[in-house]
Image (tube, rainbow, N blue to C red; front, side):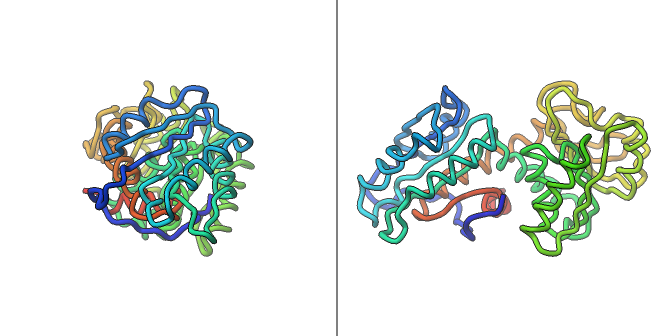
Length: 306
């Protein structure tokens, strides 16, 4: 999941020309997300064109429709948002879109990837954590660390310099994620751990100050007895919005709430920040016409959001 640009945009600004801001929503699901459509409008998009069932095979005419309709000096008023429930499909679609741009002729538009909300959710979780701990020194555990959100949380935490354990019921999958992070971030301190059995929990928790649960809906990844046994645990962030929560005892609306002497965030408690990041990232697409906003750039935006 390497980031394809080093773009650090300014916060949203009003349009400075008479060209309308057009966002092309390309969704890999049959029906384009209503959630993403609403956020786009709230982000200052003036015209929104939404397409469902978009694949690498059928995206070329949609891309060419973006880049051949306005002169290169006005293409920053057009941008592409890639969404859908399948993150891997979204990543493949972004790669295909980039192949059909013509940067040598300055015929490009900026692209944002946020399939399943994975990038904005992960950025919001790490942004919340940064308010309570020094990420460059924090030892953390990411449960559900091989899923789309978990991988991105682990990547962001590792990039900050702290030691990250990636927890999964399948150790080989956790090892693969850790290897990718080390490849992308030289010197990253990441460790794969198994959480397949009850005996694994205490070992995974040893020395961990921060735990982020990013598993599948309805799965309790950190029972209260293991949570309470974590002597070093200071901050816990649960990203499961469907009860039961992934960290037992954390409530959906928790936003920096004290739970048995530990700071807790629930999915909806992180959600407000996620929404701000999402809106700011969409608006930032119109700052230039050659950016690809993936997890690292979106986190840079998150750091600028109040």
